[in-house]
Figure 1 (cartoon, chains in turn yellow, red, blue, green):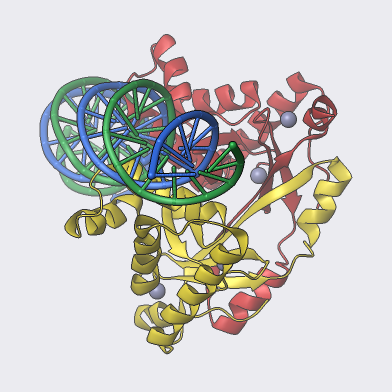
Figure 2: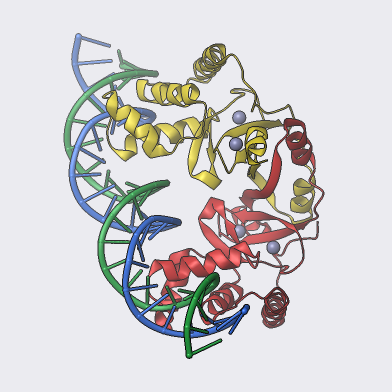
Length: 159
Length: 159
DNA sequence: AGGGGTATTGATACAGTATAACAGTTATAT
DNA sequence: ATATAACTGTTATACTGTATCAATACCCCT
Ligand SMILES: [Zn+2]
Ligand SMILES: [Zn+2]
Ligand SMILES: [Zn+2]
Ligand SMILES: [Zn+2]
C-alpha cells in the first residue's frame, strides 16, 4: 500500500493529472466520456471528498446538465464501473479515484468526525481474506474495504 | 481466520447456542435484551441470511411486535452496536453474528448470485490496512470488509 | 449521404432505506 | 416513592436508488 492522503497537496495538478489519466484511459478503451460523465468526475475531483449522488445532482442542476436522479446515477454507474470513481458503501457516497488507470484494490480510511476519506492503494495479492475465500471455494470478484475512525486532525481536536 | 459457512450445519443448535451466548453477554454487561430486540435477533438467527430492515419489520408486524420502521431500526441499532448482529453495507442488510461475544473483526463473503453471506472470523491483528492507517496517523475504530463474488454452489450452476 | 442498430440522455414516476421528533411507557436507582 | 434514564409507539419526512419509456446522439456499413 502507498500512504493515503490526509495531508495537504497540490490540488490543481492533482485534478488535472487525474482527469488526463481518465481521458487517456477512455480513449484507449473506446469509452465515451460524455459531458455529463466528465462533469461529474470533475466535480468529484474538485471537491476531493465523498459526495452523495444528490449532492452531485444539485451541482449538475445548477449548471443545467440534468436535474433528475437517473442523470447522476447513470454517470456515477459509468465512472464506478470503470474504476474512475469509487463508491464508499459506508457513506452511500462517491469519491474520485486517486489512482485512475492503475489496477488496484482500493481501501478507504473514513473519519467519523469530519467525513474526510483517504484512499489507500493496495496491491492485488489479497491477504487473509483471499486465503479464507480460497479455502471456502469462494471466488472474489470485488472487495469493499473501509475503515472508520479518526483522522490525525480530528484526533488533535478531540484531545 | 476460521473457515466460513457455505456448508450445511446443525441449525437448531447453531441458533440456540448463539442466543444463549448473547443472553449471557447481556446479563454480564447489564444490557437489556428486550422482547423486540430478542425477537429481531431470533428472526435473523432463524433465517440465517442477510435481511433488510423492512423484511424484519414485516415479520415483527405479523407477530404484533411493532409495525413502524423505527421499531426495527432501533432494535437493529442495539444489536449492531453490541456486535450481536452485523450490517452488510453492500446489501443494506443485517445478519446475525456467527461468533457473538468473541472479539473479532468480521469479514463477509457475499454471493452475487444467491445472496448468501458467510461470515469469516478474523483476529484482531489487522494486516496491511492497519499498517497503512498507522503510517497515516489514522486511528481505526471499526472496519467494513466485504468480498463480493460467487459461492461454490453458484459456481457449479454457472458452469 | 442514408439507414439501422446501439448507447446515451431526458423525464416521470415510484421503490427502498433510514431518521427526526415527540409522547407515552417501563425499568432502574436513589 | 420519586426521580432518572431507557425503551417503545406513532407520525411524518428525508435520503437513496431504480423502472420505464420516449427522444436524441453516435457509430458503422452500404
Ligand atoms: Zn482508486
Ligand atoms: Zn477528521
Ligand atoms: Zn461476527
Ligand atoms: Zn451463491
